[in-house]
Image 1: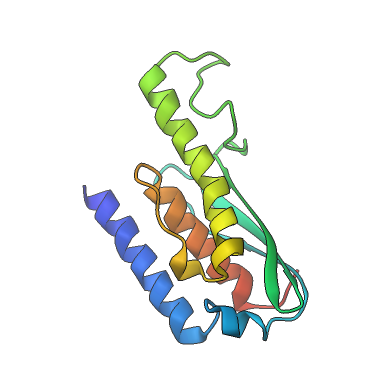
Image 2: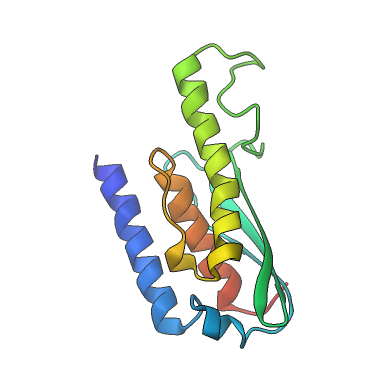
Length: 145
C-alpha cells in the first residue's frame, strides 16, 4: 500500500512538473526540434527501470516505444513472469504480462494525446506508468539523443 502511494505521488509530481515546464502539451510539442529523444526512469524497489524513445517530426510526437528492464538486464517481454522459461504461477504471469501490455499502451497513448499527463495508468501496471512518465520527462529535459 505504501509503495503504491509512493508511485502515485511520484506520478503526480512528474505530471505537475511536465505541465509547468511546458513539455506535456501538444502546443508545446510544436516547439520541439525534430529528432529522437530518449530517456530513462529511476529504478523501482526491485532494481527495474524503464526506457523510452520518442520520435518528433514537424513538432509532433509521431512514434514512441517504452520498455522496462529487470535488474539482471533482461527486458520485460513475453517471458516476463516465467520461471526458468515456464509458467509456474499463472496469476503472477498474468499480472506480469498485464504490465508488458500496458507499456505498449502508454507509448501509443502518448502518440495519440501528445501529452504525458493525458496517458492514463492501467490498474495493475502503476509502477510501469510512473516509470513511463519519469522516462518521458527525462527524454524531454535535455537535448535529443
